[in-house]
Every structure is written in structure tokens, then in C-alpha cells.
Length: 285
Image (cartoon, rainbow, N blue to C red; front, side, top):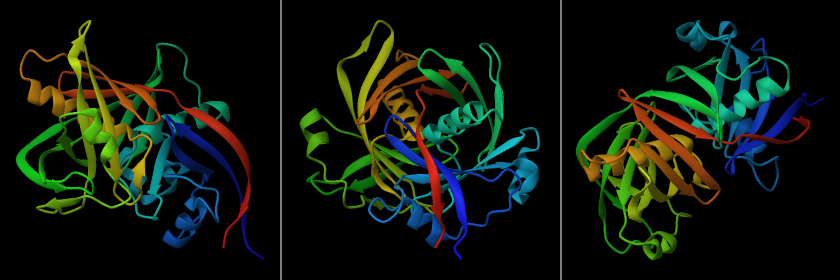
């Protein structure tokens, strides 16, 4: 008989996930099982899976022993990912709604990830995560994408996972992209990268807050309605291009909604909503 497991479906600005509770680390999902669960026609459907497991219950959790809970995030193709900015907010929303954790206003909660321990708090937009120290790679990467016409330079940004951000001149160019095909990077990053295409607002800054639009192709997934770490990387890149007078607070519009980004003392913070949609049970193939 196939094993049956409970699940919950959740999303952060349309970036959606299958959440599976496995506190004691007893569940060993194969890449094929993850891909089957995330399949939008034959499975539940999602951009990835969030396995809710205690840090003490898996070897990777030894590096995040200060956090009771570890976010075991897998992309839709089954591959492991270092971090997920939307996923970690959905993960905490699940912990709170399931009674596995508490988070009062002004308090913090620690969550273990493959990119280290992350700190979350409540915010006006929902939940905010400190993604940690960010790093800009000064080496340009040429990016080819279907519908773009010509290759464009992109800047590498690391926010716990790798990104390449490309600036576009107009909304019409952004809208014309066909991200059903994976963008081609030259040189190819050793571990791949998410690719963000951004258009600055006009004017770029209103009331001390920068504003941009973005679309993203996530490695191991494809185009998604939102990518939390990609939103942060895009804001960092545009701030870098804009120069010393650029603001530290940004509003980023993605197809799934709007997220907030702020930079403080070399750290980048991401804020936005997180929602749980429904729960059920599924048989593992």
C-alpha cells in the first residue's frame, strides 16, 4: 500500500508550496516523489516542497542547532535549495497556525536553512525575514532570453543563494519575455542561478522608497509568480546601479503581488504576506 501523508498548500505572493510536516525526520522523499507532488496536472501542484522538520532530526540541522525548526526546501524538480524567501514566511505561517511555534509582536523566531539560521519577525506586510549578509559579484554575466532580442549583461548577487539580475529599459520589454524557456548564462555559474529581469519605475524613488517591477526564472522550477530572494537580489542590484544616493527601502512588484525590501548594515530584509490555502492527504507513489 502506498504511504499516505498529510499536506498543506500555501503561498507567498503566488509563489506556492506543498508543506509536509515531518517533525522527527522520518520521511525520506525522493526527487521523483517531490516532482510528482509538485506536478500541477497529476499532483498537488507547487513551485517546491517545504518539509517541516526539527534541526535535531537531520544531519544538515547540526549547523543550525540554535533553531528548533529547519526548513528543508526542495525545488519542484526535487533538487535541494539553499534558501527561499517566500517559502520561509509560508513555513513560519504554518508553524504558527499549527501551534508548533509562537511569535508575538516584537518577538523573533529562528529557522534553520541550508544558508544558515534566519530570523523572522512580524511586519506591516505580514512577516519579515533577515536574509543575512548580501554580496554583489562585480563580474558581468551575459544573459540570453527568449523574446529579449539581444544578450544583456547581468550582475551576480548572492543572498544565501545565487542570482543574476538583468536591467531592462521598459515594461514592454519585460512583458515580451518568454520565460517558458530557460535563460542562457555566459559564463554558466557553477551551481546555476535564478535569473531576475527588472524595470525601474519612473521616477525610481518616491517618498524615499525605490520602486521596480520584476519577473524571474527560478532554477529547478521555471518562471514563478514571485521569488523572495530574487526580489531582494533585484532591489540590491538596482540600488547598486543607482549609486550612493539610492535609498535603502524598496517596493518590488512581481506578477503575484508586492514585496518590501530594506538594507541595514549590510543585511537585506524581505517582508510580505504568507497564506495557507487548504489541507488534505496524498498517497506517495
